[in-house]
Length: 457
Image (cartoon, rainbow, N blue to C red; front, side, top):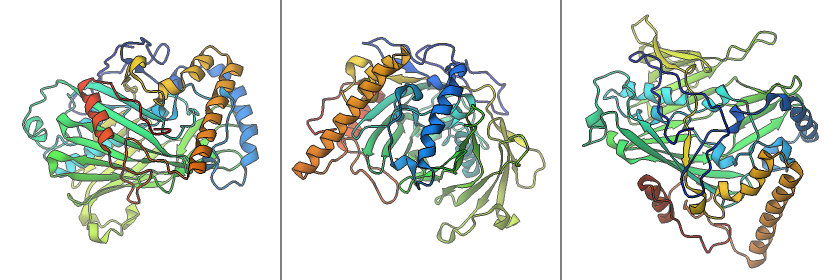
């Protein structure tokens, strides 16, 4: 894959331009140069899936009745894992151009619709590829990367405000850099903090990632963990508008037939107290015998942040409705403005593929940086040396247990390096000076970081 891939999103104002589908290995490795990465889940040999799933199912059956198997952190054989670190896999910028364009519209409704456009692309990996199980993250493990994309997405509603949205500078379809930093801040429960930043566009996003999972016997129900309060997006050049996007529950099914799939049947919310606009999205439950339709409906409406009591679409008074949403979250999504009968295309996912990440060169990664930390395991899996991969993986896990024992014996409490605390009650992490320095370095293309003297940091 080339180092930079840029494809406009599908919008009513622009003809669809297909993204190139991945066609080779997941990354281009050069020790002294940045590498690009596409999840190998798009490239896996599907012939191997059935036997993997049968083995995986036999392991999961041991956890029937366990309230949260994600907190158990059981160790899987290497042949069942995707050769990808968890922190690299879990991110929301499969299409970063939808993220950087959120603040472009001068219209508050237009900005909320842009948030929705981002929302429906953030998990494109599950639409285009198969679900997979990456490595469990080690405490203090971290991952950082950039995306470089063309700032060419038109705003939704209102005049083209490229100058005013960035304060002083007209982006004029130039290449924009988005930087990402994430760190495993807790092991029990397993939680990671993340921060996304694009200074030239005045936009950032942050939050804690944590999953709760329960095996039902035929599928796995995945919900946000107690510390995962959603994705928070801040628009600095829009008077610090902040959006909160909560996650719906999902089901991982298809184990019995040997073909994994994700279904969603839940309600989630997007709120912006400053603009006083809220979205309710309802993912429709599939019929018992019917083919999955992956339908979603929603309403965008005016609300009172001090009296936020509307949780169902049917509860929203018609006088408060600003727009309605409808479509297939694996296909096309449309919006219809109030007092209009003409649906407008919000996003067409069909021509889109995840944009490759740009990752620091191996020679400039620290020992607890994801790619370097899991390098031996990844190489062994890619070479189908599964016994060696399992051995190396178990050695890393044992090292983590020994470090945890040493901390306990010393009476010391582990602290993250890039974030101020392992967990925050409001669900919003804060960066340390090292965290700000790491993001600044990413923006400048300077990947140098000093090794930390703190254990596991």
